[in-house]
Image 1 (cartoon, rainbow, N blue to C red):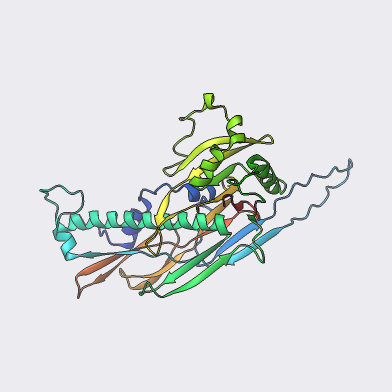
Image 2 (cartoon, rainbow, N blue to C red):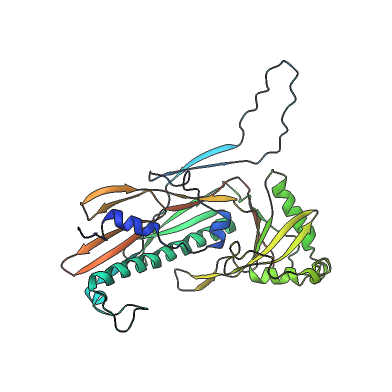
Length: 355
């Protein structure tokens, strides 16, 4: 029986498809991926978005043909998604020493330990890519654009790439006349105006994503406290599958008959400069609804050591390995080319809520 080559392209791709995807609140809830339509087999991806509208269907006289309704506000753009490509070296020393979580006395051979290490390394790199996608989700919601730093070998040197989903002034940014922690603030009245800006375009507005200090200000507001029925406060009401670690539904506000989920998100990540950073910037809030955008994936073209040829692979994650016989090392790569895009123009509103 022939031995399975765990480093073959097909074996690595199969392993990548079996990775346990980490739950990422912003990306999963607001920028999901449809594997049938959002994963491209080309380097570029096509992004389509449109204006919301609330037109009525026309009445047509009996025995007359229908009235032609033109497709309006439809925009298609072509983008080249950024390349994300962490790698992890595998050395002879790694194969000869006990791995993390491995039994003290084990009979694992170096070949068996190699297979376990490759899968573990791919899982670690997949987690890193997922956190990058979550950071991109937050950046897009906050700024309506993405700024990416393409790094080669020297992390201090990079090429900056910006993708902006508007021209001129950001239409998704709003300014409060009175911040919510200042005297005279009227949170419900402000929310009513903001909700109307979105729903007047025929788009939904159901979620208010808040930095922790904004959520605290809302829940402690005197007017809102009077509206909240604390006797019916249900701690177990929210499905933890919908709100993973870091996100919590603190209350539901009735804003002129529309129910708004007030969600606090305090998850953090380690930024490129080493600082612990909140995904949702302190003092800020975002009004939107689930599925306001989507995550597209461009194909990855790479030289594969198995045959020395270029291959173009479509998928969320594309692995490969590179061996160095002189240094007795193998580098495992896990590549991804995600691009987060809005489904509609003005699908959310971002604002600074506190002073």
